[in-house]
Image (cartoon, rainbow, N blue to C red; front, side, top):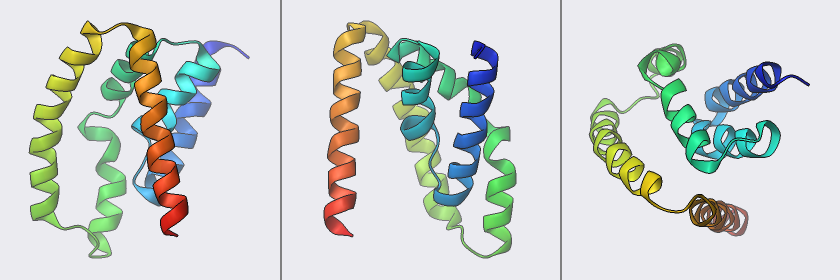
Length: 120
């Protein structure tokens, strides 16, 4: 399957899951770009951040807003944290060896997955 088609399918899957669960970038897009499209972890993370800029979440957020399911104060606080954190994380992530970052990312996914399974 050509890389642009793989990336399009990843985007569609991440969009659906983002709309359902509020996830997409770190949990779906980054690992999928690494596994299925052959990206390095740093290129996958940067590509994910580039795709997830403001317009992408707007329609999903609008639907949640219409249903009364958005806490604007919490969203604003998260946005500030994301803005600063993405900058700091990108600086750190691009300065470390790619293999090390990928291992850390895998550990993070395992820890979060285990917590979700055990707390259900």
